[in-house]
Image (cartoon, rainbow, N blue to C red):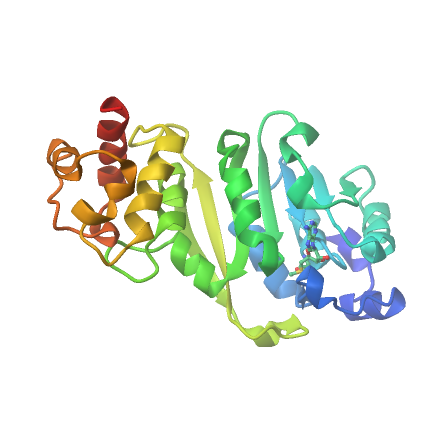
Length: 278
Ligand code: SAM
């Protein structure tokens, strides 16, 4: 888009504003506009959409999101050194970019917009999982979340049963959202390069849950089951304080199975039986 052509290359932006990457803020910048464009396009058409970006940094992904036509972009950045670079982008896209200089962990993002928004972010790895869990708690307000994680976290979000990566995060994410891997990004694409490969994942909240359950109860059952993931469920579920053989028989689940073998549907059934037996 013509507005982006008015902005300087990202490497110049970083030099001009002295944006030396801070490890404590998880700063690994993406300077390749082909890649930032690809991430933004993974979120689907952005025209007319409100988008929330966490951690815009020098603004590579920010520029791509605006260039793809988002009508409003709310960007939350903790590092005030990035503000002048973001102000330049705001000038190139008048009235389309709102920047908040705050800690995303402490923010209720849903108070910043009406209706639904899409989240698109190259997340700081040290706070990516707590941020995702917070957003899952308000999944009704987000039409999609297109997020870059370290590959190991992406593996957990999209895992299949009976794999090492399948666990508590898998159940919570797949219960609430349809989760699909988009593509991997090599460490070489970042400045500075991190030690690990990154993966873009798209989570689309389910408008209606396929398997009903009370979230707090489901989380309790799943935590107990995976607390001792190598044990049979008849043993691992003991912390729930109920006779586990009865609980499992009523749920139509063989008590010799292990947590990682259960589907999301079976966990939801177990949670309902547990709730009704209390
Ligand atoms: N979006 C940029 C890109 O793709 O090049 C930067 C991504 S970098 C991995 C993560 C960004 O998140 C950094 O700009 C960092 O300052 C910011 N950040 C780290 N912790 C944050 C927090 N708690 N709240 C808001 N932003 C944070």
